[in-house]
Image (cartoon, rainbow over all chains, first blue to last red; front, side, top):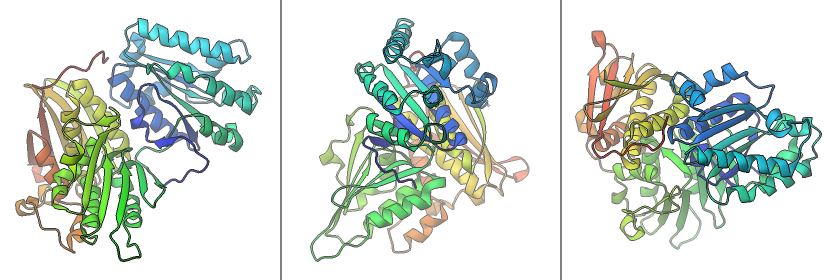
Length: 313
Length: 151
């Protein structure tokens, strides 16, 4: 279970990235980072989006990178040939003449988005390794100023970006500063959990509750739904809207813990359609202490068949 | 197994998070609409977790489309269906009791119950020589719309 400090943006799993999102990711482990990049790429290609990766020259060579991204699925070669997938190095993208210019970079990315649009792609998603910046002697505040200046590129919802900041290459101050300028921070590990305490004692659990994280998930639930002192009824709040998947085992644990609360208590659970499917399939309607609210973050509105009044179990 | 093979993927426990995303991408390419895709993915992922937990720690996922449906097979080389699939009576809704958490801790039953509810068709077969288990889960493409622009 990861805990992040000093983050002003929402922390989400990579699966939750949507068109128009400008996100950053702390990188401490190269293998984990490649899993996230692979997920980012496969998801984008399957959606028909144009996908662009800007790797550091010290990273995998092109052939190994493509093999890693493909993983036997057989889609990368066609995507490369058609131009749907573009693999380049951060140095040639950010330092074409050996120097960095914020204005030129913003223009270049805007032009890239325009070319993708003209080619008929419904969206453009790009991920870039930002390790070039400290190596080229670009000051931290210049990097942050550049990141902030990109905001208008995302305004029309065409572009999605993931900016990867390797902690070793970029240093803690830049990594910390970049979290304050990106609206979203992507979790570094696939299949992990991000648990944060909400004002009022509730919990937000983001990520994925599956085989590898089920013990952490159960532990987080026990903490969130633990007994509270006092004689009155208690209201527990669980924000699972950025939990992209909940296996049946975890759904059962949640229902079991809520069903064990005193009958006067209420557990308000907010989640997306997929976890709701698991909860409903295991009998959430039979747990009177549970108030289930289903919203689809991808639509940024409640789903059609799930008006809150209908959903309250 | 199918006229159109969409994915072949070997997996162990640590592979499941990326396999989940690859499966979702594959079902998207197949043209299944969102709710059908999510339901089938949830069902298949339950079968994959069962294969890891009770079917020898590893498995193979195959996805194909034929005869108007998307068909997913999860095969393992474990001790056979009796280890993966609980007895039929345990698939029935059960009263929530203080011991229910203990049953959940075994990880058996709930996943298959959800998988049954979410798919058009689920079959469980023993593998060759009665070794291993193959779970087949299918969803109809009849209500599907093609994914726009997918490669």
